Image 1 (tube, helix red, strand yellow):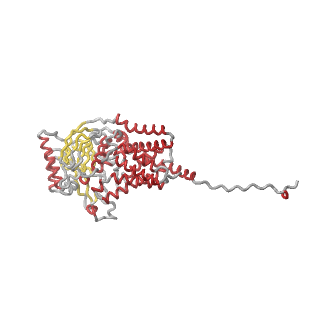
Image 2 (spheres, helix red, strand yellow; image 1 turned 180 degrees about the vertical axis):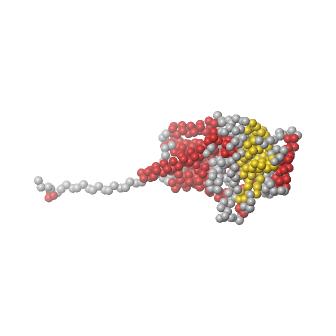
Image 3 (cartoon, helix red, strand yellow; image 1 turned 180 degrees about the horizontal axis):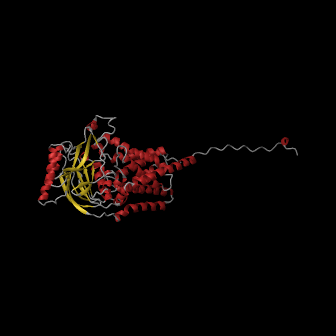
Length: 527
């Protein structure tokens, strides 16, 4: 195999990482996404396994360090460096597989499956992973977004990756002046599959309606520290709910069927007697409808729970949802028994946050509601199982206070809108100080609150029990792409080894003996 110079390949990887970052918020130019993915394929072309892994790693570093740069300014530079490094390594691992996969016919198909599998693995491992940066999350407000109702987040990532790799294959064919029409037709076909749902969106029939009130109470002080005055945070939500009840009684707004508070609307155990508990009861008594409180609940000497609690005016606290994916080194310390840090921000995590396991919807005012807390919305094992289990409406309780001055808020809201399309459900988002809103099943925002304000959104929303194709498929796309990847790696490894043997210089043939000289007269045979 003829080796390409490494420096131009590294430069192309840098360009690809920048283009992919620009596909997401805050730049939000999603048409750059196929170009960024294509650069990955072109940068790793005609390289050995090790060199391809290095180029893939450089692509991952450029992309991920810039994509979650908000973590540096909110959580801390140490957490940003650690998480970005771990996530970038996955793009390097994928790079190791590229020379193997490229030995196969129709390699863009197999490489797209490998990219999708890589996203799946890093979204769940290690320590529950980090889904940020999946290709599907850049698709909101594009003609490709409605496709998520048919194929889910995993399927949409695959189609987007395939479009980029087909573009790369077309570029290679054009440079080599071979099969240009074939690969141009394939690329157009993939794009047609992506945008067809925009013309034929999957409409989920509604079976009823309910009215929800979303309360954004705001965070006092600097606005980026929920603990700066946590009791005032709770009081803000209490006062806003009491005022809502007065407005509803006077007919200025519709009477809600339930009220949604955000995550961390109480930063202490709301069940303990005191001002926080009394404030919640005051709000519930005024509203006379259930209030879904976001609270940190005592889980014993070693643990706390981050929960959404349905607080009924007659029966008190009832159904609860517990956050499935606490943030490692943000809400718990992995392997604390082995390593218990007592420095920096880590010293503030005195107790670990336990993970929830509930997949059944909450029952709120006669409605089955699928809940998620903050980063949970980015994981495939939180909302989709609740929808399949009968959720008629979706809610997200989040506390974006730590990220209020960053672009994390915009990225998370984009993911949330895609979840509404994927499930075919109305979705209500309550945040402490931004970004709260009510989202329709087509991903459009029908109401929103300005960040860093106290706001109440009252909206009539539809209910549904029907399932989109994506919800019916469940985890099958993930399983299929994983099997495709494993098969491609095995087949590619065999082909790669044979090609290496073929490319090795053949052993030099022994020199032929010089032809014998004609016999001299004295050696001539006797006749």
